[in-house]
Amino acid sequence: MKLAGQRRGRWAETACAWSLRLKGYAILARRHVTGRGTGAGEIDIVARRGRIVAFIEVKARPTLCQAAEAITAHQKRRLARAAGGFLARRRDLDGCQIRFDAMLVAPWHWPCHLIDAWRDEG
Image (cartoon, helix red, strand yellow):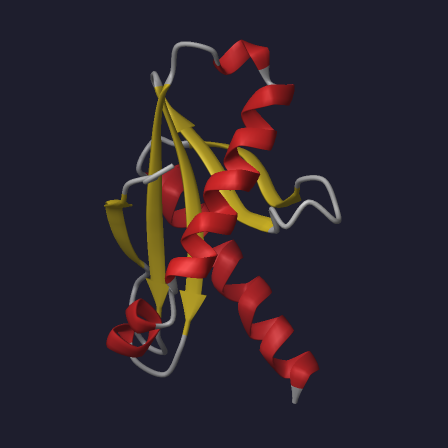
């Protein structure tokens, strides 16, 4: 069961990456893990278009509504910490505008891109 979920998650991330490419984004990283043991976690996709760097959480569920509800406040905080770690290693991204997006995936739907889905409260 867990393997099937991981496979579905990888497929969803691939679909989202292609969707972003079609919109003109460059994919900087996929499944990026920042500092094991720091509590930062994994960034599903890091994408850039112009001066905007988007840290994207991908959620695949049976419905788009369930996918949206699956993004918790805890995950948002972990993603913000991971984004900080990513940016600390990428000085070439200094001066870029940072954004947190979500991409929701459900069967028979094109990935739904929620631009600027939340703000880092930290």
